[in-house]
Amino acid sequence: MPNTQPSSATPEGLPVLEAGAHRDARSGSCVMEYVSVLAGERFTDRPACTHPAVAALAWQVNDAVSHEVRQRLGLRAVDLVGAGRGTDGPVRPLVLAAVARAGLALDPGNRFFTRLVRRVSAAQERAAARRAAGQDAGDGGGGRVATLLHVGPVNHACAHLLVAARAAGLDGAGRDAMMLALLDDCLASLRGARTEIAAPAAAG
Image 1 (tube, helix red, strand yellow):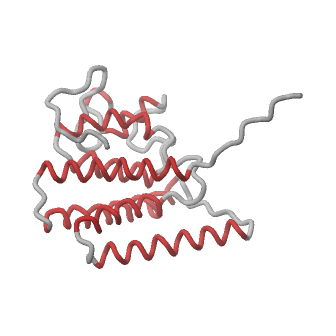
Image 2 (cartoon, rainbow, N blue to C red; image 1 turned 90 degrees about the horizontal axis):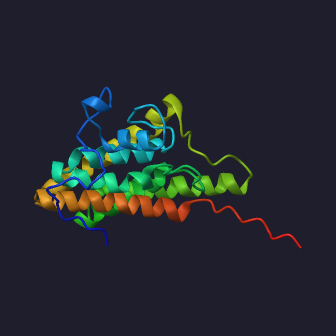
């Protein structure tokens, strides 16, 4: 289980992470901007190395948690490099499923998250049918299409999650723990869905 206890100090060697987007590294960095630096890309909160649905979730977590707990996101930056790339099938349903799990843990009867689970299941079934028919089951992982297909739905689902957290009476520490656990759950789901590349057989 990840350590979600607040720390008053930034782990040694990591930048001080801030909420929001920034013009350049001198003006600050969110977790995804730090990921872009780690990946050797231009400074941006939308690095190409990370699927846009995963990046959208990371933005939401970055901005929702307290300053002290935000520093722990730097320890997850390496896992965000490449997250959702090379995954077997569409990524957005996996991200939304993680949000739905977090929401239903707070409020098992919540209609929004119950409907979200059904929509995610339907999307995964359609993708499986396309794969079975030899068609592309991808989900448009880049460019302007990504903003429409991925960022909006993830932001919307996370907004509902934060409303549910307030309704459930979570205090700041509880919200921090929930959002960190959400990101960890999403990353674990993506690792489980990653396409495995078989090692070449030994010669002879």
